[in-house]
Length: 370
Image (cartoon, rainbow, N blue to C red; front, side, top):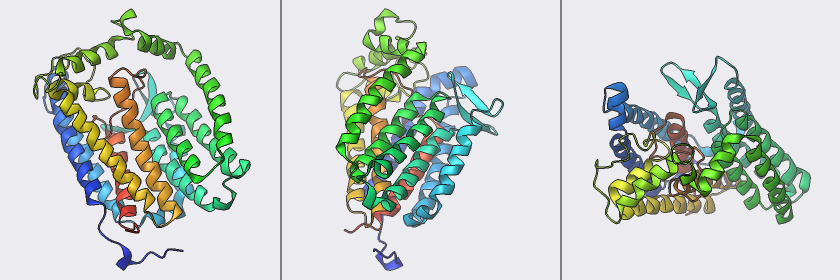
């Protein structure tokens, strides 16, 4: 059993930290570039969104360094409390008068002039809880009841609460991340085959149960069938990426941000990056995320215990899945899901939670074997 002592803690993964801060800086610049036209029109302040993003980033960085200072194994003692609090907030967001509706989803709780999104915090809370559970049940991980059934039921209970909002995109990220964690823990492959079949049926029923999801699927298959309705966002996103060509139209010269692409500073900020900086700029962003993923996996592989390994993998899987979904939506590979691009998109809860998660990952990296 590894013993945590002060002399065994080293510097964190500085490459990981550098990539995160670089992405954060690029995000601030692009939030300004993509939002200042809309900000002037709506708030008479070109810096409205970037000022708020800077505040979110500042809080997130403080949270990141604070959590870096806490030995990661400390969280194992409080996983039940953390999960309970996350569940409580998921319930509160569904209460009329407490939960705030935006874009058709009741996913936020108002706190003064700002709001928080409980489902974002549940992602990290469930990662910590599953990491503890998988570590504790290491010897029974191949059994159906303890190694598969219980964690899967827990995951889908959480998914159910999130779908009541509804927030399908966040639910997909959460389920994908947690299922991957169970898979790498060593649960039998046969169980996942059955889960995939069941998931395909459930996914189909979820789509058929809501007309707007069917509309998103049809818009994905042929957005030009409804260019002013469900296909509008993806068409405008492709119109942004196309003119970018190799080098882009230049910083600040995007045309799509002039009220063509709805709120380009959020889910579709990658489209503005592609328009202003072209294929080269978009590729650089993808490379930075690739390096981030590689460093995160490296931390997981060199973690000194199972709990640290699962937490590190869960955090980097969560971020990577979100990146893959967001970019895939922007370039038209999958239907619109409403997922932000980590570190780059405008948003308080998502940015703050992601930076806090990185703080835990940096702490794990400071205890790695080499």
